[in-house]
Image (cartoon, rainbow, N blue to C red; front, top):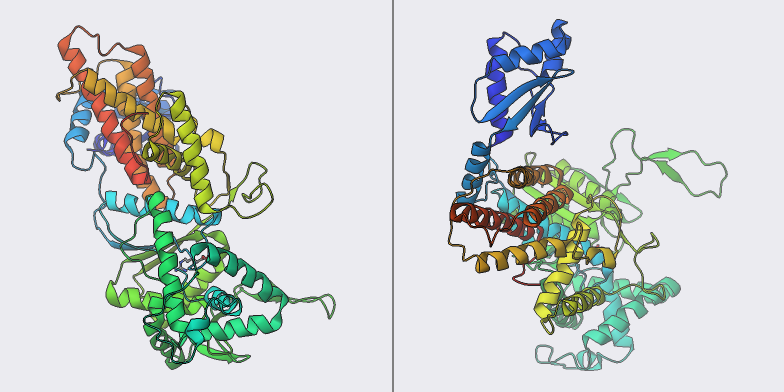
Length: 591
Ligand code: ARG
């Protein structure tokens, strides 16, 4: 049941009857809601092509329509306005209430979509830069589920890179690993003594700083990294123990954010596929040697064009930079691109998805373009498979610069969540609710997520906790509050089910907002961005507020009217809950 389609169909019958072509016939939501609910400018298109007055064409089309559900009118300069009858809106309400998918139309050809988001790095503490991927990724995955696709999600941990070599080297040099390097050490039984998460959080940054200052140290770290990749002992055992410790913590963090993954794999899981992948490039003569490394040229014509230097010592710059992808390092080590290519090979062997969607920040755009091109060139990704990189912008502080601590340091993800939960707790306390930590988490995290997803994914945005957490306005808490308010109404009104009979403008506006909300799922699906869905969820909650303020529901004497109003409340509640679920935000019973 889709009003736009129905109206288009009715119009097209009339248009054909008049002998005009239907090319370009479209119906949109009205931008003058006080006049009509839907509109079409098609008469103007026809008028232009046949050289007539637009209003005359619109009038003729309207005269050829007889329909009880929609009222058509022709207005200056040649628009066709459409108003939906109360009856049709009531029927729509009933349809949404009884439809299994709350009226949201599923895709005609469901696909298998593989989502790669999260991407935490083992041994490195999650920080504020890691927030957007699980927020956007989880919402996109749920959106695809709602739209009828099958989905698989993988956290794709960064667990095989230089950071592992650096961390283990630093731990070794600081004396934490002596038992592992002792002669005849029993590696399976040994535990990492004194190596806690706090220790890791200190050792990695220390090592990372050293590598930039100390060439020898960096070389040694490269070597350690290679040893891990080659499964050499005791490096490999130590690596596995650190990984386990770290993954436990990572999972806890993602759970706090309602980000759930079917697969907790990492770069390292692609390892058995790396040789195979490299051989494909070599066999197909797609790889060449360059300064000891193995590279694949992925630039197309007009890309990666050297810009002539003005002087000898000026560094070489490029127009449309698309450097070759390096798939083997000078020392035989594997790189980020290598594991990503091998991972695609693995995913295709195991799951053969129709699309793989990656959600990372936009600084990785060139990397993914290189990986995608490598996989297409080599056939590792079949032609019909879609590879998508959803690149998001940076989360900035109020000063417009990347969000930092007061001292200018990196903010830990845990600290952001704690901050949100504390602020939500304080707000709840104002409402007389104390000591409900889970409720505060739902509200605090929900505020953050809604604030994030309300922006176009690709853009940077400002993290404004004050604004996000407001119980009033375009915020997560406002939606949650609306649901909580309806809950209490339904309990007090002893709601037991019933039909919605739309009969005034406030009720009409609710159903019309609901229609827009339903259509915004499709928009989100097409654009990989949830901002529109957030906005129309807010619009529905706001239409409900107007209705709530203007009508006395619980004290209504007419029992039929009361039951219809409660049914409408219930409908709004279920649609808001569905939207929040899709966004990965929890609903709440009270607040
Ligand atoms: N670990 C990476 C990082 O921190 C993100 C991983 C994204 N996924 C991927 N398949 N490369 O930047």
